Length: 144
Image (cartoon, rainbow, N blue to C red; front, side, top):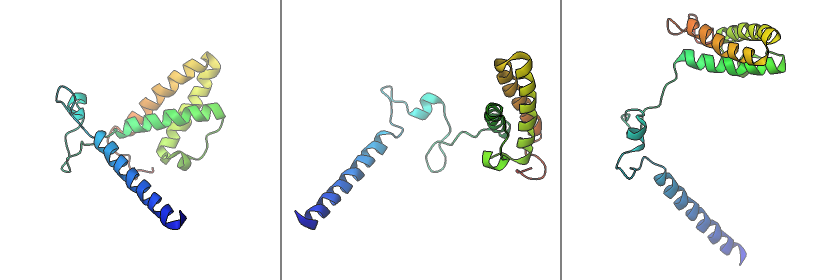
């Protein structure tokens, strides 16, 4: 078959993949269910944006902070090390919260065990992050 046959095979394969991708993307769109509703109306998610797609859900900064601090607090507790705040994607202020949470969790783990430390991590991360963001964005910019 030579190179002409190989070129035709690659072109056919490329066209087939393009068509398959288009079919899959069309099938994954907001098609109506048997009752005629769309995904957005069934889930109650977002209002269509000007482009016609649903608006993304926005996580409040205090919730995002609590999620990040809880996650990295568990990692620091397991590894017995804090690591670098920038590699964790934390601001300096969030890192300060992490240190407070981990220190308290270590003490709690010694007193009451691992499960108590896990509960403390979630509770303290939520409390300290809510306090940090109670007036909106922290002073001094987002990395403070």
